[in-house]
Image (cartoon, rainbow, N blue to C red):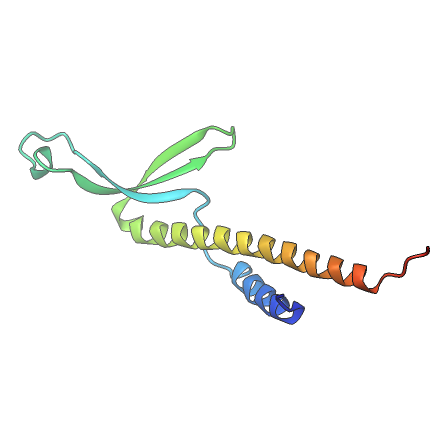
Length: 116
């Protein structure tokens, strides 16, 4: 069985990652290919020009899509990657909480006294 000390070390590591002050894109940032519409452009025959887009939920709860300017693309891609990592870390933290709860519940039951 996993030890509590190991879980606590892992929790500390995750909390340090979760509390970093970095930019996060609260949504999905991805690269798509779009055609510009110019008939003589090379994209008319190919898959299109690379374009970074940001998918998110607006304040009204509806799904939104924004295209990101080329000069801001790298910043947004990194912020999107960090958001994905944060979501993974939160999932791991929830899993750790469950394991810790199971260990502590088993410990409590093993140390309990019962009246017959």
